[in-house]
Amino acid sequence: MQREGVDPKRIFIAMALIAFFILGFEIFSYYYFSRQASPAEEPAREAVKEKPKTLPKLMIGTRREKAGLGDTVKIDLGDYEIELALRGGRIVKLVDKKFGFDLVSEAERSLKVFPLEVFTGDPEVDQRINFGTYRVTKESDRIVLILEDDEIKLKKILESRGDHFLVDLETNLKGPVYLLAGSHPSERSFYTHEGPVMKIDGKVLRVDPDDIKGRQVFEGRIEFAGEESRYFFKGFKGDIDSVVVEKVSYGDGKEATFTYVETSGQVLMYMGAKYYSRIRGLGLGDLLDYGMLKIIVKPLFVFMYWVYEVTRSWIASIVILTLILRIVFFPLNYKSTTSMMKLQEAAPKLEKIRKKYKDDPAKMQEEMMKLYSEIGFNPMSGCLPILVQIPIFFALYKVLIITVDLKLSGLLWIPSLADKDPFYILPVVMGLTMILQQRITPSPDPKQNLIMYISAVVFTILFANFPSGLVLYWTVNNVLNIGQNYLIKNYLLRGKSPKTT
Image (cartoon, rainbow, N blue to C red):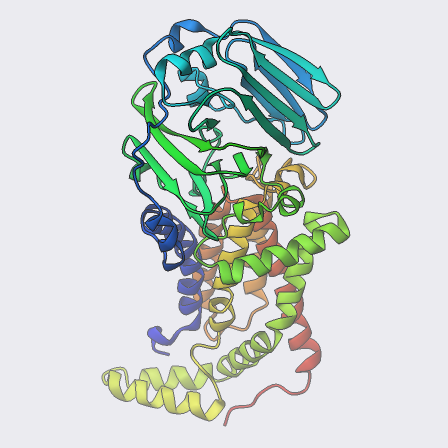
């Protein structure tokens, strides 16, 4: 049989495409698409312009570095633990206790710039506001910070609502007042967006920090604005007149963006995980970044989350999704298995054709195609079931890397399905299921099984650092595929083995 027509090679290529598609597309979209506005984002980008009024500045290189934090107050608020500095009335620590994560970033600590700072654009006033002493009191679920200054009246009121806060500013300051959300939380990005994010005129705009030069102003009908990382967000929603993003340098050549919102009323402050059950009720569901394949990723996420809420198990959600996909793709798998069985039985005839026309490749190909037609074999039938799953596979990959809930869901020795298996046991099990799957799959040339065994090793290495939830999906998929092949060969096709003439 001509080697170009050997089906295992086609399958090997198709499987390799999955890995390259996932990694390549994710990196490409992160470094390319994130720097370009999609058609849906153009209206928001048109809203960007410089304002004639005075813009806020972080005042890096002034009293800030020398002032220090001074005394602080720690307050337990149920889902959160907050630490406030009396100097400046700023948030110097905010831990989302459900996830054990501090929202105050590395850049903020290095520069001593913290969330809840207030700016007017007047350096003298801003220094008094952000380095002056505040009196902090707690009244039930309200934290009140009052600036002790004879001329400037400023009161910051934080009202805890369990999973979020309401923020009020009461002041005698004239002109625009800007409230600082801060910089994006410090965590591994995994090629997801990190930096300023806002919803303007009904469109979500994720700003590439590299596009910010100095300070940039965004205007329009602003629904929310702040800074995001892979799993977390810190920002405001509500009465927002404009958004200012400033980029500064810190540490050893590092850069970070800081986002302010201009507000004259009460705003909702959310600083925590992009936990879907929280943010959807706050009108912040669009914080989840579904990526370029949103049309597939979002329905898949919503379905998986619905299963999770019913079963209270992400493992069950992954298994149920895999089972449904195997049922949906069963006709393709059935056709592939029967087609490969026909090719396996025709192997002797294919070998004869190869020997007879070894000096005439064109005639060999013609005779092989004729035999394929006679036995009803499609050369693409073996890899088609894998190819059609590539978009689903990528969509699931995207779901798993944006779903913070998975950080709290483990599997036996694996503490988090959002992270890799620390002992690499699951990837090895996945590789073994791939080998077992090949052993029971009809092959026209058993020698070519070596290709698939090599692919199992390659995929085991590739998947070793993937989120465990994704490896679990592929492992369960392999097991169900093994079961389907056994069912087809030993029950559905028993006594109906395709014959060649």
